[in-house]
Image 1: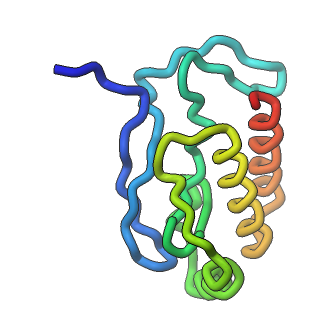
Image 2: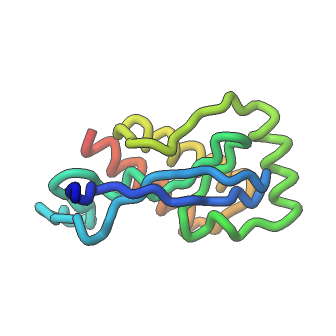
Image 3: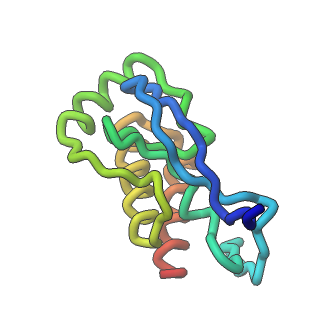
Length: 137
């Protein structure tokens, strides 16, 4: 029997286009914390789960954190279809991500958060994560 890897595949159904896709997540049992900065940026041996917190639909471009991904109403869905999907060049972030890939996913989620009028705390959290990713780059 092979060794269990750090990443596993998660099946996700996009609430905008209703198409299922796969994305990677980090197994929490495999996390090994090395250190934590004063602003709570955590460094891990191996994969950093921060890189995988944003789900991105490869078909329509909808991107959000796992906790917000399914909470979309019909009005917001129409905004995504008009402002994101109509301009989306299919990209698949479902595999192993580089820090640059992760930055792109967070920037897309931030853009969508601004379009959908997310609360300031949610937008701030996305901005902080982007800053952390630039720091670990």
